[in-house]
Image 1 (spheres, rainbow, N blue to C red):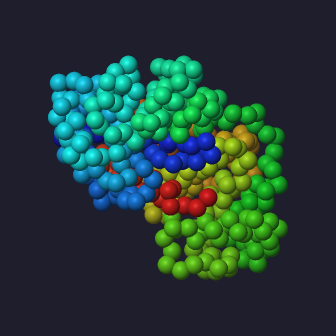
Image 2 (image 1 turned 90 degrees about the horizontal axis):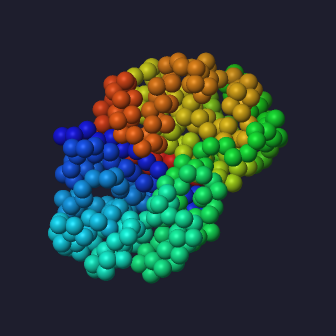
Image 3 (image 1 turned 135 degrees about the horizontal axis):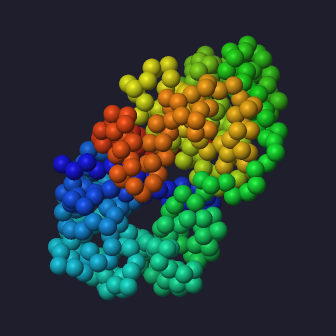
Length: 391
């Protein structure tokens, strides 16, 4: 079977929240719909049933009815180019779609009008923003609204995102929000500084009463911390009622992890919800990928490396400046600053999973001795984790 690595893109609405994820299967030149189905079938046990929608994109491959051999989950949306419905295999594909009735996102192109008249209901219409002007996008989104909600793909900048929202689409897919859009601030704001103070206390195993006193200086921090810990993503069997209870149940190491996430929530960036979701995915993905490859005591460090990988964008402060005020283990700081170290390869793989180069993902995974099944499964579990968190 052809090795098929997956990459992902978030779909973001006008409130800057991730409402779905687009999974791209990198089939390569030899990959077929049968290979795609086999790859998707391996994810059955980790598929987030009932979670946020997942769009399935098979890239420039030749689509055929074989894709419908996959038992499509309710929250899955299959992306289809209009040409797939109008070519030689079109009648078979249309018949399969009418029989199984999966959720479909039709990619708009010059033959889309003909494809829309083929009798296949579509919930979404996808627009390639690199092939359309803003005026064309606005016009087409309005004309196709009766057929499905508009989704803008390949959005590259924050300005493009805002333009797409103004054009009337429901969501935009891309990583436009991960690049800081403003001039870095010279210092952290008071809320960020207080969380940093608590973090440093936890890292040096200060007395609980000393940490509690620091938390009480900002009631919002205590509230957010308890909300995080009681989120479904933690998987705790009981509800945490106080900070002292949190220390008892979690211990200092786990508390360090969740305070690290709390730091990211202090962001004032308008794209903070999408940034936070991405940081959570990276954090959990790096932790899962490191399983069995580093000592168990380092799993939390891998998690924090991923969680902090977007701190410059989240806090609006240069990464070097953020790290100067924190007492982080050297491997974490080295990875975040691009200085190498044993965590660097895991971070690079997490970043590669957000790109469009399947070969690069495969090469990076091979360096760590990871199989496609391990990587793809970890990515799905990381998505489920981020979706379950309340932030």
